Amino acid sequence: MNAFEQGECEQSEALRDYAFDELSAAERVAMERHVAACAKCGAELQAIRMTTATLRSIPDREIPQRIAFVSDKLFEPSPMARFFHGLFTSPSRLGFAAACLLAAAIVFSAVQRPAEVRTVVATANAQDVAPLIEAAVQKAVAQIRAGDARVAKTALAAAEVQHRREHSALMVTMQENLDVMQKRMGAYTSLASLETTVGGGGQ
Amino acid sequence: MILRAVEDADLITNARKGDVEAFNHLVSRWEKRVFNYLLRLTGRSEDSLDLSQDVFLKAYQNIRKLDDPTRFGPWIFRIAHNEACSMFRKHHLDTSGDAERAEREPAPGVSPEVSIAVNAAMARLTAEQREAVVLKVHEGFKFDEMAEILGCPVSTVKSRLYTALDLMKAELAPVSNRGMR
Image (cartoon, rainbow over all chains, first blue to last red):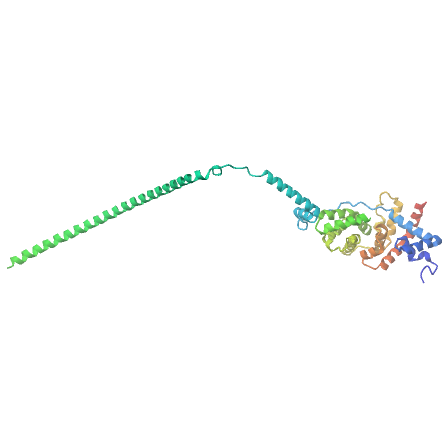
């Protein structure tokens, strides 16, 4: 048997739920009708509201020190990452960026177009070019041959000098050997004459 | 209220991506409420400030675990409730009634008589009853949200609140009636 049935409706949980706006729409309508007709419930409701109003009259205190977090590079996306994330997640921004790039490319291309260059080759006739080319080729060939001749002459001179040194050295060696042989021949001749003299006197 | 909830959801979405500035905006909206909730529980301004900082630090570290951004309020108060309980357990504080609370400096802009009477009435409640009164009367949470914050059934929340209400009606009747005249 609930409070209403016991005639103690002012003690009912429903009345308190109504005081704290916890009833459904239908329940609230029913309770409002009851409170309007029941003096006890009306008084109890008034007491509840005065108590809560007194509690609420004590205001909140200001926080003595504001709380704030400093960005931590480890956990926060870099500004570049945030920029690109914001760019690529927004179709309108992406389209605008693409249009800006295209416009910049067109302007850059127009400004940077290379100037027209005139050269002799571009304005010369074909008939005039062949003799010039032939002359240039012959000149280059002559220069190369002259260079080769100089190199060959230098090498030949060096070889001749080397040959003469070697020849001279060989002649010196041969002369020395000849001198040695002549001395030996002289020595043999003297010895042979001496042997003859000694053998004839003994007879 | 609806517009603010949408904006909070946007801030939460950005904070979950690592946007610290978005989280700071969120903090600026909720820090005063969280601080006053903790102040009414602990009665100490310095402890409440330290706890508030811990609460938002934990919130930042776990923001990705918040599945429903529209439930940010109950979620942040749940963290605050847990931090307060941890502090009480760590310091073995007497939470059943704090005589010093009654002697706290009266709130500015309020009649000293009312301020003292309210402090005295709150001091006579148990910690659980006091918390239920703060969450319902001062913070305006619904019973299902309070149940989520306190980690107990709605029936338990109602029992604590209505018991506290009966006690406070008797304590505050003299000043309440005087205010009506």
